Image 1 (cartoon, rainbow, N blue to C red):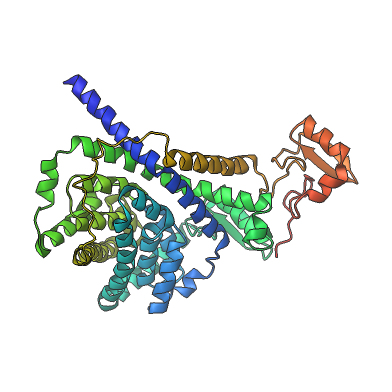
Image 2: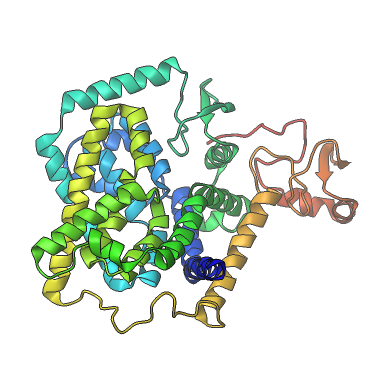
Length: 469
């Protein structure tokens, strides 16, 4: 009995880590691309642009959301900031859905773990879902209730001294503040967001120019770190849970919850049940994709699986966030709109794909327990490349190469303290990480003085003096 249990646990861990290994390169590359978009695609004035109920604003909200990927909680927090600034509820919900479902890393994971059919259903269905949601909100929105919620939210945040981070839209903290040239004090959620804001003000040139400097790579590395900090728990939990679900949940459970059969009734029931299971699964963001693999392996229909993937924004923990932000009534309205549109779109995708005969058939494929995950193949090569690039970005961030408002070694670019090794050249003080860098500098001081990035002086007497343009 004990030996059997241990064997099952080990098998569950093998499957979970195997799924993670299979999708690792896609997650990393997706997050790097997402970080690039976050850094170099401007999202200023979003609140004003999304303040009207129109097809144009809905389209912009969808585009902004797809460019602002993050976890379910991060999406909810950013949407709260947009709502405070005047965004229409329809655009707020569209932004949240797009930022968790129409994103690069999720698409790559779906493609690798579930196949191109699910990827098409995710993207096409996501756009249809947003359109249907817009129609429902247009005819059912309780405007007075949402305006009261907005007023109460602004009043509460004002009383509690809560400011919005101008970088990410999340709640700022007094621990991380910055005084602007105009005398305004800005609050940020973290040191990383504050540094990103500073670099945005001090940055020069387009993204091509930026990526030829350490400052540009530091921006990318800093944003990449923030993306991972939001997602890593969901990713790890999702993959591990999927392994245990596949091994320990008997087929009879899925057959009981998801009715088996042909026809619209069974498709609709599976779609509704897929959303319902997502609500109580506590697995959000991209972590629900490996869980969806477990459902698909358990015989759940196409409609049930894709509806489950849609529904990461209405898990119980996320619903509780809505309640804290807007109150019970608004939370229930958001839950109702999302539940109906997610279940309907899942059902519609199965009917549409069945019409064209492109619903995938796993009958002839290997099961999760039969697959070999760790071997020398293209996945191994892609993971090595992805891990190397990830390690490089982490190195750039940890060493502070090109970091704003920091004293740094003019030779190697590392951040250094003002009480360390130093030398004076042309009445300017330079600081170094080691005697070796100091000796290199002393051999060619003019070269390294010229290479020092503009706006990032080595002189500790002016570590925060930047001309912001």
